Image (tube, rainbow, N blue to C red; front, side, top):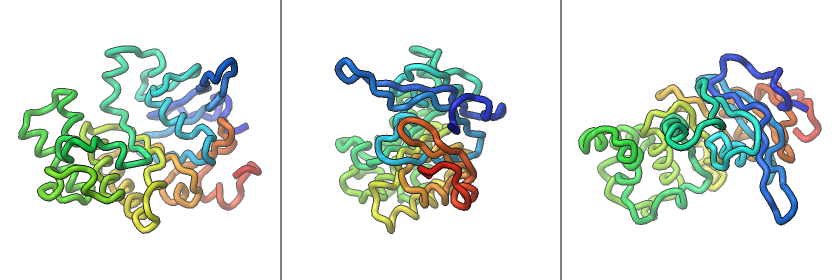
Length: 255
């Protein structure tokens, strides 16, 4: 099955996942959410990870972030095997790896202002002074199409779902990451807003030199944003191909 073994992986990848397995305990039983998959993403690429609900795609994305820690396998990011890192060594990799979540409203602290939410990553990492952080907040808000003067002092409930997702993207950009895991970032949004967010992600990818893993359950959405597509089914990758090839001649019945 495609995605099993490591022979198909490329040597010049920013992210390299080898034989990844994630299992959860359910009473006396073990449930394999992800079962022995391998994939890679080159710098500047967008990998679409697509499959039905429960196929393990979101668990794969979170395992790359080491949330949860994989049961077995290797996740090599920028030459470092994240699965061997612990404590402060693992923490130091966090700025380069960011995540955008499916529900933009619940991923933002309702008690904090937008300005504080977006500035928090820099505060945690003691980057810049107050003026420097304020300037960075303005930069990323403007980049995602939000007026910083109107938004910085307001709270998340005062914004629409699409605006909250823009704010989430701005927060993910604060530490100049190399890789962003996009976990179904448009599935909770209206169809009219989805295209705007997809175009924004593409613009941010070009502007900031990002590499993306784009998780979705909609093949049409994935086709428009991805350089390569990996199709997941029951915790395994059943096919990896360029979007056009996947549509013209899928090689697996599930696809």
